Image (cartoon, rainbow, N blue to C red; front, side, top):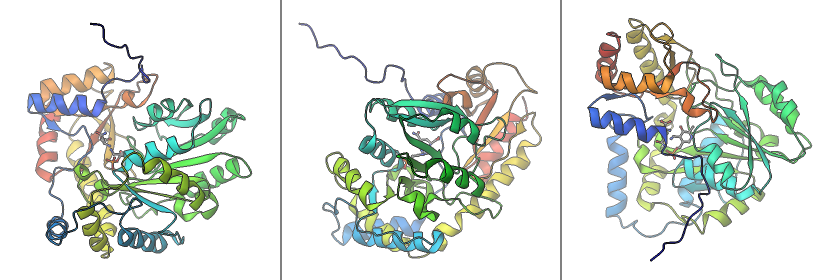
Length: 383
Ligand code: PMP
Ligand code: GLN
């Protein structure tokens, strides 16, 4: 009996580095500062609200665009934070996580042969999401070591086929952020063109030192041509909930929903009921930056006793470190060896480059309990 053959649509893709490093950490009992997720508990109140919603009978399909009361509170939040009025009816769709919002946005608009500018290091789903739609990633390195965008390079790489520019701020894995001058450059590049934007803002509240988040939602001229993706998992320490949302123009969102309705259709109802209530208290998201900044600073203080050299982290829950005072091994070998020999897992930054570019930098996630960070540092000091 012969089985049908399958030609991979993603021949270059293996298992994501996050799963590889988390599995290794679990197998070896290592402290896991690799994959980005908090190890401290989420809000008891939010858990109780979900429980309550289930007991109150909110257990059937929600509206395919997302629970209306949740979209309304999100529109209020956007108006309050970014000064832009968006319609909850036509511009916001609740999705099963940020990853899905990104994939759906790209699938909604990309056609074979379209070119998409992707800055590397890039979150690992972007390029496969471009390629599975037959589009062509145009990779541009962020400038090392500050990981800012070289806009002159962007201008040089534009062609008549450029369809989208992908942004991510605060940035995973580097912790860099977009500044108002970046937005001005972007505006001048896209004005009068057919270029769309995808802006991944899942870390919107994880921004430090009082710097305002340069959200695309602040700029109605850019929002007209953008999909902006968010994640409740990142905001409320519940990455396992896989719930997020997409914000766009009414015209783009109409098309997004055509794809969404035949994929997931609608998202987990009780969580949406709970979030609609919980988000009414603005402190639940406004307090996040200071909370994570304190963790960044504590981790930095602990790590100052090691031979690792920090690069600045302005946002996200990640901090990059160079290890050139320790070794000249490739970063993948280094992270595996450190996990095995010293019991601390991290992520090699070369995994975020399709070319495997290796600047001998590793990423640590500091969204962890103080004791986890202390345990990791105790071990890393021995290197
Ligand atoms: N984008 C970036 C940059 C991320 O780090 C993550 C977190 N994994 C996501 C998107 C996806 O978020 P979610 O877990 O809600 O799918
Ligand atoms: N965003 C998380 C990270 O960067 C992980 C998400 C995932 O495992 N896909 O570590």
